[in-house]
Every structure is written in C-alpha cells, then in structure tokens.
Image (cartoon, rainbow, N blue to C red; front, side):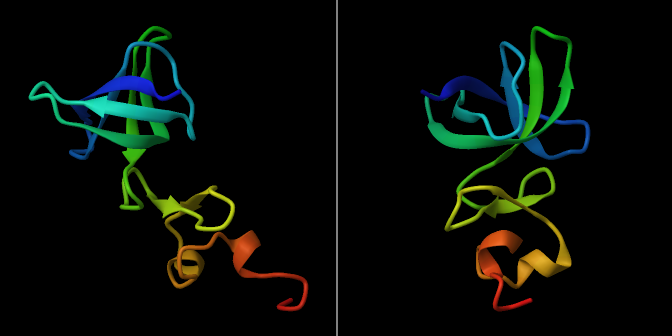
Amino acid sequence: MAILATPAKLKTGEWGARVAFPVKPGDELTVKASNGKSWPATVGRVAWTDGKVSLCATVKNGYRAGGETGRCKECGKVIRDAPEHRAMGGLCGACAFDEFDM
C-alpha cells in the first residue's frame, strides 16, 4: 500500500514530497496535489526529517529526481546517476553485467 504524500519544493529547487511521518529510500508514495491530481512516486532520498514529518526527493515514472535516474527494468532497484549507469538501457550494474562480462 502506498503512503500518501503532498508535493513540496525542496531547498535544492527540485520538487519532492512531504510525508506526515518518517520514510526511507525505496518507499512507495502516492503524491496528491491540492487540485486533486495524484501520481505514484518512490522516495529517492530523504532531504529532511524531524522524526514526525519527512521531506524527500522522489523518483516518478523513471525520470531523474534527487540524483537518481529511475529504477532497474529487471530487479526494480534504484539506478544511481553515474556515468556507468546512464548507458545501460535502464538496468542497474548487477543486472546489466553477469559473470561472462567480467
């Protein structure tokens, strides 16, 4: 079940989400705006928390948010924004390479 969140502008200038309790990277969210529009998102990183409320950068539909480029098409893990990951066709390093590639 996804956690309900609202859109929030982070200090970095990027859009993220405000959640009414602590979250961790990888948690699934449903972000709902005041106009009624909602969308699924995943916590990419926690920008701030006071133990009760969390502000976090999110990954939405595979687009970059908070330093991530999306999720691996094969295993679902977050793909970090790094030169060796951008050219892997949506796969993380573990899924893009096997023992025969080393």
